[in-house]
Structure formats: structure tokens, C-alpha cells
Length: 576
Image (cartoon, rainbow, N blue to C red; front, side, top):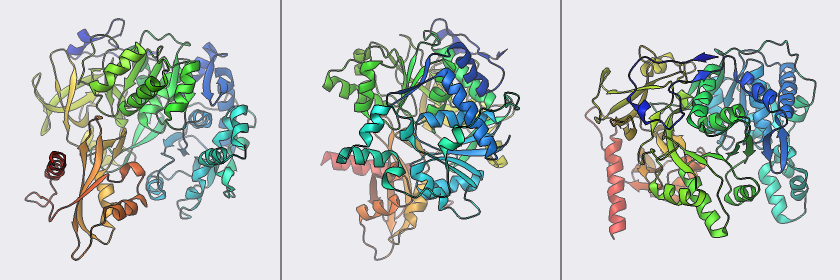
């Protein structure tokens, strides 16, 4: 183990909750060692729960060893990149750690991405092995020869469910058929020729214990992010980065004893937030990780009645929906001690009823994919401060600087760009040295692109962001990507896409379009066209027609002016 220590001033330390250390002790070794440590300490504890089926830590360790050997025989080697295209399921956890056991790199993908979105990422990382939900295997098989992975491992998530659930899915009733079809391609008779069954990969002998293990410096995850420029990039996160962030998260919640907590994975684990708090933090705590393929309030509440989560990472809309559903069904949420909200602003209108109903804490945090991702959080206690994203985590340094000259610090209370440094900060973007140089400053400081203020007690408040990303439902949307999709429609001459703030704290995607000469505006048709190439959450909820887009003297579209124009129209429509 090694302790990360810092010599620079950290005024926020005085605001830490009791028993939270100023610096963390990061275990040496890899994420594989992290999980195996929990398996050695809590072999009989339940590690995973999925629709009634449970897996102990000892069983999980064995499954990982077998899957690692299966992948080794399939040709995966140290340094290779292996794509995971999976929802939350036990196979996802096993595949993640099996790939890491071989010293290979995991690259996570949203299984609901359109073929175009998936292809864009595969063109960048070039993985030759993919472990995918059987419902998206046909998409991967449809890639051009030079892009198609040589090995596609097909995963039927229903095989990991409890017997009662599997039997229910086989009933001839319409609802059972629809549920089965939503969970697996096998229910619809989809062809899976040319793929390798996950069961064949995971059912063989265990890997030789003497097989070389990954080092802390090896790249563990290639995490795609829209970064600070709006262009999707793969952030290189090492075992040490992710191990450090898990240690920082553990330090922030000292009241949670190892081997006793229940964590709900309602966040997708392909997202950096869900990856760290569910795949690494929860596993390092010896927690019972309850997996949900997607958020469903009714399904979550059924599990809550058996064993509520003691730790629930999520986003504000999930907390709001869960709280309302529990209240209407008169189901108690008591026992949810700590809820950590991220990815978007946390409104007080969500916090108050949640804390009243649970008796626990709901606090806001902040992070970026490039930082593994958690950088700061509000104290879990009465010193939390609404409207802020909290305090830097242990062993994390932050500065507020002049965006035009990052060497110049801003005064307390003065707005500036947030730059950060810590063991969780990435080493750069995959294959993009210029983009890396633009955000990593001398001394290891990372430019977040966010404009913030810091008060005298060290609490950080997000004011604005330099980057023009839109955050909706906890996911980043690149305006440029949406603009390109809309621009392909014959009726569109020009377009600008912006985020419009919502009361929930995140944004909705909105577009201002200039019509081609003689073209007719059909908003529904444009949305349907966009859905052909974009994920549903990226499709604009609002499209307005303008005569021309506001531009700077050098011709750059002024998105701020576009946003003001759309907001002005919204205000007018509300007033009328």
C-alpha cells in the first residue's frame, strides 16, 4: 500500500465530515487484487444478486478465473482491447474482471447505442474481441470486414436470473413473451451464427494462478467521453487511477463497514459513474451488489422490501421517481443510509422529501470520466451545503484559475476554471496527443472546462462550463454530433444544438434550424429522422425555426445566443 500525500494548501479539509482522512492509502496492485481481497475476506458473502439469483464472492472469483482462461484461449493477450457491450448483469461483472486478469483493457459501450454510434467508437479503438448482449450481436456482425471483431462473444442475460424468473419468462402469456424479447435475442429466434456463446467461454478450467497479472500502471479501462471539445474520445484509466478512486470513495463514507453494505446498481456500469461506484467501490467493500438491467421503480421497490440498499448511487430523476413511487405504494425507504447523486445538479426539491422518507442523507458529488470519475462530494453529514458539488475528495487538489491563463489563480469567491490534480486523474486520451496536451498542464493539473467558484470553506459551486456538452439524464451529448445528424436531412440548411435547463437540474436537447429554400418544417419528421442515427436521449426534444443563426465575427455560431433565443420563445409560450 502507499499513502498519497499533498503539501499544497487545502482549505476544504476543515469542512470534512468526522473520521474522513485527509489523504488515502491506495492498495498496491491491480483491480483484480482489489476484488480477490474481498473474496478472501468475505468468501461466503453475497457479491451479486440478479432477479433472485445470488453469487458469493468465492463463486465470483472462480467464475472470473474460468472466464479469463476462456478468453485467453480465444486469443486475448496482455495489452489487447476488449469491448464490452452489456447491460448490468452478472456476466458484465465477470467479463470486466476476466479481461483485466489477462492484463487487457476493457472498453465499455452503451448497448442501446445505434449502429452508427457503436461503429464510431470501434473505429477509434479497433477491438478485435467483443463481449456483447445477444441483442446487439447482429449490429457488430454487420460491421465492415475490416472493423468487425474477429471474436464476438454472445451473452444471454436471462441465463443469470433465478430459476423462478426464468420459468416465468417461458410462460406463453403475452407479457412474458414481451419481457423475454426485451431481454434476449434468443426469444425472437434471432440468428447468432458466427458468435461464441458466453457459456462456452466461462465454463472451462480456471486460469493458471501463475499467469502474469496486470500491474497498477497498466491501462484498465478505455472510457469514452465527450471531453471538453465535444469530440468523443477514449480516456485512458489505469488500474492505479481506478483503485485510487475506489479508495477515495471508501474514505468518504467511513460509517459503512466492509462486508455489510448493500449497493444497488441502477446506474449503467458502462457509464464512468456506475463503473466506479458499482464495479470497483462496491466490490472493494465486500458489498452485496444488486444488479438491474435498467431502472424500473416497481422492480427496485420489490427488492427494497427484502433488503434495502444502504448505499445508493444514482441521478436526481431516479431519486425523485423512486421516492414518489414508494410514497404512493406506502413502501418504506428506511435503511437507505447514504445516497450519492451525480451527473447533474441536485435540486433541493428532490433532497428534502428523500431525506424525510429515508432518514438518511442525499448528497451531491461531481466528477468527470477523465478522473475515474469522482473528484468531489458533499460531506455525508449536517455540514453538507445545498447548491454546491461539495469538497475535493482526500488526496485531491483543486485550483480555480483564469481560463485564459491557467497559471493565474482566482481569488476566493471569484469565478474561474476548475483545474484538478490527484491519483485518480487519467494519463491522456487514446491516440490523441494534441487533445491530451490541451487539457493536461505542467505538474499534472487537468483542465476540467467547468467554471466554478470556491467559498472560504472550500465548497465548490458550478457556475457554467466552457465546454458545450449537454448533460441529459446523466449522459453527455455532443451538440456537434446531433447537428451533423440533423444536417443530413434535405430540409435543413443550417443547425445549432444547445442544452436548455430543466427544473430537474439537467438539460433537454434543443435545436435551432435554418430551413433550405422552399422546404417545409415538420418537427415530428425531423425527430424520426434523427432517431435513425442517434440514441433516443440525443434526439432534440424541441426544434425551432430561425431565419439565420447568430455568429461571431469569424463565423462561429454563438450557441449562447441560440440558447437565449430558444429560452425566450419558451418564456413567451409560457406567458401566453
